[in-house]
Length: 102
View 1 (cartoon, rainbow, N blue to C red):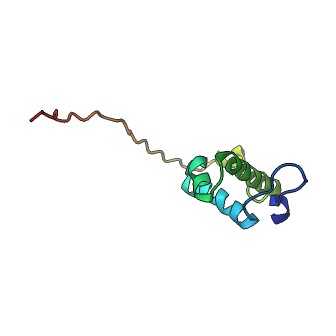
View 2: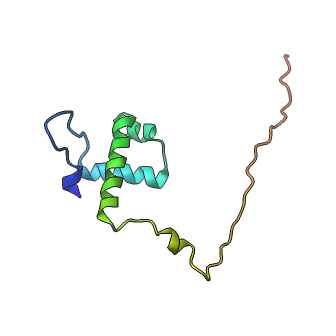
View 3: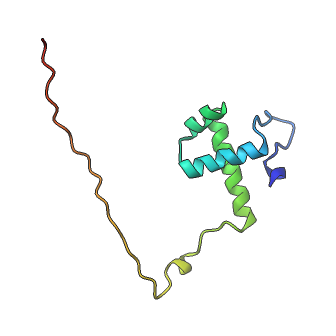
């Protein structure tokens, strides 16, 4: 995997992050689901290279073939019992007392 994440070619800028750091960026995005802007701020990058890193790691994992989602046939096998929970998370405006001038 490391050869695919390293910068190839002579045009454009070189990666500021090592291969290990690029994997950590992708893992932070998937695990914490922070915005690419905030991940970039913590690593000293703009959000555009963060998106490129994440997309590059995802493409490598898809090509690998070991990290595929199950097909639709596997999801809908007979004998499975689905349990669904619905949560209503509506917002309610709070009435606060008005600040009075003293």
